[in-house]
Length: 196
Image 1 (tube, helix red, strand yellow):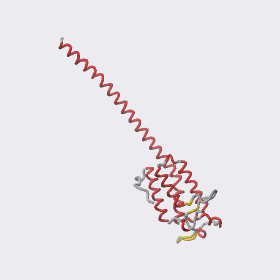
Image 2: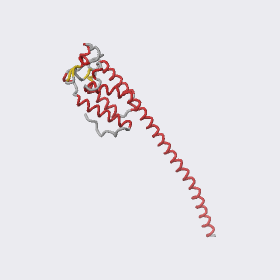
Image 3: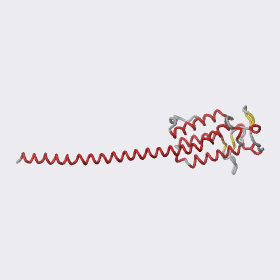
Protein backbone atom coordinates (compact mmCIF):
# COMPACT_ATOMS: atom_id res chain seq x y z
CA UNK A 1 0.00 0.00 0.00
CA UNK A 2 2.91 2.28 0.71
CA UNK A 3 4.25 1.71 -2.79
CA UNK A 4 0.90 2.65 -4.32
CA UNK A 5 0.76 5.76 -2.17
CA UNK A 6 4.27 6.86 -3.25
CA UNK A 7 3.38 6.12 -6.82
CA UNK A 8 0.20 8.19 -6.59
CA UNK A 9 2.12 11.08 -5.00
CA UNK A 10 4.67 10.97 -7.82
CA UNK A 11 1.92 10.98 -10.40
CA UNK A 12 0.23 13.90 -8.68
CA UNK A 13 3.54 15.84 -8.60
CA UNK A 14 4.10 15.04 -12.29
CA UNK A 15 0.62 16.20 -13.18
CA UNK A 16 1.01 19.42 -11.15
CA UNK A 17 4.40 20.16 -12.71
CA UNK A 18 3.08 19.22 -16.15
CA UNK A 19 0.20 21.66 -15.66
CA UNK A 20 2.48 24.42 -14.36
CA UNK A 21 4.80 24.40 -17.38
CA UNK A 22 2.15 25.61 -19.86
CA UNK A 23 0.94 28.20 -17.34
CA UNK A 24 4.51 29.42 -16.78
CA UNK A 25 5.11 29.56 -20.54
CA UNK A 26 1.87 31.50 -21.02
CA UNK A 27 2.78 33.96 -18.24
CA UNK A 28 6.28 34.46 -19.67
CA UNK A 29 4.84 34.93 -23.15
CA UNK A 30 2.42 37.58 -21.84
CA UNK A 31 5.21 39.38 -19.96
CA UNK A 32 7.47 39.26 -23.03
CA UNK A 33 4.63 40.44 -25.30
CA UNK A 34 3.88 43.36 -22.98
CA UNK A 35 7.57 44.32 -22.78
CA UNK A 36 7.85 44.11 -26.57
CA UNK A 37 4.77 46.31 -26.98
CA UNK A 38 6.20 48.90 -24.56
CA UNK A 39 9.49 48.87 -26.50
CA UNK A 40 7.60 49.35 -29.78
CA UNK A 41 5.62 52.23 -28.25
CA UNK A 42 8.81 53.89 -26.98
CA UNK A 43 10.42 53.49 -30.41
CA UNK A 44 7.33 54.92 -32.13
CA UNK A 45 7.26 57.86 -29.69
CA UNK A 46 10.99 58.51 -30.17
CA UNK A 47 10.55 58.45 -33.94
CA UNK A 48 7.62 60.89 -33.77
CA UNK A 49 9.58 63.17 -31.42
CA UNK A 50 12.55 63.25 -33.81
CA UNK A 51 10.20 63.96 -36.73
CA UNK A 52 8.65 66.87 -34.79
CA UNK A 53 12.09 68.21 -33.88
CA UNK A 54 13.18 68.02 -37.52
CA UNK A 55 10.05 69.95 -38.52
CA UNK A 56 10.77 72.63 -35.91
CA UNK A 57 14.45 72.86 -36.83
CA UNK A 58 13.56 73.15 -40.51
CA UNK A 59 11.64 76.29 -39.55
CA UNK A 60 14.26 77.60 -37.09
CA UNK A 61 17.60 77.04 -38.81
CA UNK A 62 17.26 79.69 -41.56
CA UNK A 63 16.45 82.37 -38.97
CA UNK A 64 19.22 81.17 -36.65
CA UNK A 65 21.67 81.35 -39.54
CA UNK A 66 20.47 84.85 -40.51
CA UNK A 67 21.08 86.04 -36.93
CA UNK A 68 24.49 84.41 -36.86
CA UNK A 69 25.42 86.07 -40.18
CA UNK A 70 24.16 89.49 -39.14
CA UNK A 71 26.00 89.57 -35.83
CA UNK A 72 29.25 88.09 -37.18
CA UNK A 73 29.22 90.21 -40.33
CA UNK A 74 29.26 87.27 -42.75
CA UNK A 75 26.93 86.03 -45.47
CA UNK A 76 23.77 88.02 -46.01
CA UNK A 77 24.23 90.60 -43.22
CA UNK A 78 23.98 93.47 -45.73
CA UNK A 79 20.48 92.41 -46.77
CA UNK A 80 18.87 92.54 -43.32
CA UNK A 81 17.48 95.60 -41.59
CA UNK A 82 17.43 95.86 -37.79
CA UNK A 83 13.61 95.40 -37.73
CA UNK A 84 14.01 92.20 -39.80
CA UNK A 85 16.62 90.96 -37.31
CA UNK A 86 14.20 91.58 -34.43
CA UNK A 87 11.44 89.83 -36.38
CA UNK A 88 13.65 86.73 -36.68
CA UNK A 89 14.33 86.84 -32.93
CA UNK A 90 10.61 87.04 -32.16
CA UNK A 91 9.82 84.12 -34.50
CA UNK A 92 12.55 82.03 -32.91
CA UNK A 93 11.48 82.94 -29.37
CA UNK A 94 7.98 81.83 -30.18
CA UNK A 95 9.12 78.64 -31.87
CA UNK A 96 11.47 77.56 -29.08
CA UNK A 97 9.33 78.59 -26.13
CA UNK A 98 5.95 77.50 -27.49
CA UNK A 99 7.46 74.15 -28.46
CA UNK A 100 9.74 73.70 -25.46
CA UNK A 101 8.12 70.34 -24.54
CA UNK A 102 9.56 68.94 -27.78
CA UNK A 103 13.11 70.05 -26.97
CA UNK A 104 15.41 68.96 -24.19
CA UNK A 105 16.20 71.42 -21.42
CA UNK A 106 19.73 71.60 -22.84
CA UNK A 107 18.40 72.81 -26.20
CA UNK A 108 16.26 75.55 -24.66
CA UNK A 109 19.15 76.65 -22.41
CA UNK A 110 21.54 76.72 -25.41
CA UNK A 111 19.01 78.74 -27.40
CA UNK A 112 18.55 81.25 -24.58
CA UNK A 113 22.33 81.52 -24.18
CA UNK A 114 22.73 82.23 -27.92
CA UNK A 115 19.99 84.87 -27.93
CA UNK A 116 21.41 86.55 -24.82
CA UNK A 117 24.70 87.31 -26.60
CA UNK A 118 22.82 88.80 -29.55
CA UNK A 119 20.21 90.95 -27.85
CA UNK A 120 19.87 93.14 -24.79
CA UNK A 121 16.34 92.48 -23.59
CA UNK A 122 14.12 94.36 -21.14
CA UNK A 123 15.63 97.69 -22.21
CA UNK A 124 12.58 99.70 -21.13
CA UNK A 125 8.85 98.99 -20.80
CA UNK A 126 7.35 98.75 -24.26
CA UNK A 127 10.74 98.88 -25.98
CA UNK A 128 12.13 96.25 -28.29
CA UNK A 129 15.34 94.40 -27.56
CA UNK A 130 18.55 96.07 -28.68
CA UNK A 131 21.11 94.44 -30.93
CA UNK A 132 24.45 93.69 -29.23
CA UNK A 133 26.43 94.76 -32.28
CA UNK A 134 27.56 98.01 -33.83
CA UNK A 135 26.79 100.04 -36.89
CA UNK A 136 30.36 99.71 -38.10
CA UNK A 137 33.16 97.18 -37.88
CA UNK A 138 36.23 96.14 -39.82
CA UNK A 139 33.76 94.60 -42.28
CA UNK A 140 32.10 97.89 -43.16
CA UNK A 141 29.18 100.11 -42.27
CA UNK A 142 25.71 98.69 -41.89
CA UNK A 143 24.21 102.00 -43.00
CA UNK A 144 26.25 102.17 -46.22
CA UNK A 145 26.13 98.43 -47.02
CA UNK A 146 22.39 97.96 -46.48
CA UNK A 147 20.88 97.18 -49.87
CA UNK A 148 17.78 99.36 -49.30
CA UNK A 149 17.04 102.67 -47.55
CA UNK A 150 18.41 102.93 -44.00
CA UNK A 151 16.10 104.71 -41.56
CA UNK A 152 17.89 106.97 -39.09
CA UNK A 153 15.67 105.73 -36.24
CA UNK A 154 17.28 102.29 -36.56
CA UNK A 155 20.53 103.60 -35.06
CA UNK A 156 18.92 103.52 -31.60
CA UNK A 157 18.28 99.78 -32.00
CA UNK A 158 21.97 99.03 -31.31
CA UNK A 159 23.59 98.81 -27.87
CA UNK A 160 26.43 100.97 -26.65
CA UNK A 161 29.90 99.64 -27.37
CA UNK A 162 30.42 98.27 -23.83
CA UNK A 163 27.34 96.02 -24.23
CA UNK A 164 28.30 94.52 -27.59
CA UNK A 165 29.29 90.90 -28.00
CA UNK A 166 32.45 90.01 -29.93
CA UNK A 167 31.91 87.77 -32.98
CA UNK A 168 34.05 84.94 -31.53
CA UNK A 169 31.72 84.67 -28.50
CA UNK A 170 28.75 84.57 -30.85
CA UNK A 171 30.40 81.81 -32.89
CA UNK A 172 30.99 79.71 -29.77
CA UNK A 173 27.37 80.05 -28.63
CA UNK A 174 26.10 79.29 -32.14
CA UNK A 175 28.27 76.18 -32.37
CA UNK A 176 27.07 75.06 -28.92
CA UNK A 177 23.46 75.58 -29.95
CA UNK A 178 23.77 73.75 -33.26
CA UNK A 179 25.61 70.87 -31.54
CA UNK A 180 22.77 70.47 -29.03
CA UNK A 181 20.14 70.74 -31.78
CA UNK A 182 22.02 68.16 -33.84
CA UNK A 183 22.05 65.79 -30.89
CA UNK A 184 18.28 66.30 -30.53
CA UNK A 185 17.73 64.61 -33.88
CA UNK A 186 20.63 62.19 -33.72
CA UNK A 187 22.91 63.78 -36.32
CA UNK A 188 25.58 64.59 -33.73
CA UNK A 189 26.59 63.09 -30.40
CA UNK A 190 25.35 64.95 -27.35
CA UNK A 191 27.79 67.67 -26.36
CA UNK A 192 29.63 67.06 -23.09
CA UNK A 193 29.34 70.66 -21.89
CA UNK A 194 28.17 73.85 -23.50
CA UNK A 195 30.98 76.33 -24.07
CA UNK A 196 30.42 79.85 -22.87
